[in-house]
Structure formats: structure tokens, C-alpha cells
Image (tube, rainbow, N blue to C red; front, side, top):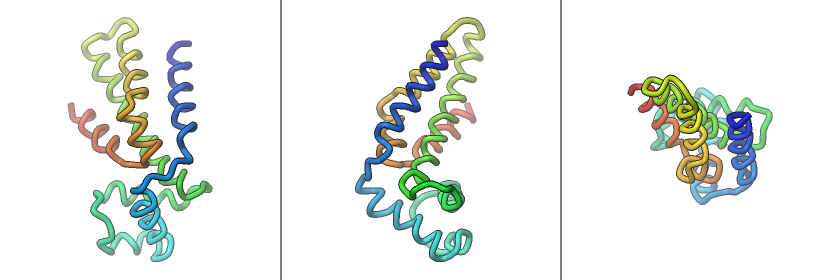
Length: 138
């Protein structure tokens, strides 16, 4: 019950700030999204229009197919990465503490860290993608 409440609460937190448009969104992310749509979702990837890594650009290109407003489609990439990173936190903690609540507590704590949800749900940044990959390697 606590885990379900924690995940639901973390989603509610992210939904509450989803409409915020950061300067990065207006100046970069929105423009990149538009370039993917205008130049063709895969054709745009041939151009050097972003300093972000290819994985993010592939995900951004795929997000243009979602039946969501542009802002939400962009942010959903990073929000999903939050949950992937939290899953790897769960797996890591469970390796050391296979019994008890600690793996779940660490997972929920990760989802509520201000640097995690601000980065994805508020600013639409992709840092959780890197973090999830680093956690996976550990």
C-alpha cells in the first residue's frame, strides 16, 4: 500500500508541474521537436541541430508520434527515465538488502528527490537518462 501510494504521489507531483515551460524548453527542446516534425522524424536526425546525445534525440523523434501536446510529449521522455532510474535503485538496494522495506523506500525516495522531479517534470531535461544508464552499469 505504501509503495502504491508513493508511486501515485510521485506521479501526482510530476503532473502538478507539467505545464511549466522552462527557458530551455522554449529556446531548445521545443525547437528541436519542431525540427523533427518539419524535416521528417528520422531525416532531422541527420542534421546537427542539438548538443544532446543521440539516444535523447531518438526518443524526442519518437515522442512526436504521441497524441500529446508538444510540452507533454517532450517531458514524458524524462519522466519515464525517472522511473527507469528508480527501478535500478530498487535493484541495487535489493542486492544489499534483499529482505525488508529498504529497497522500496530507496525507490520512492529517489522519485521524490527535488533534483530528480525538477529536472524531468519541470524543466524537461534528460539527466535521468544518463543516471539510469549509470545505475544500470553498477
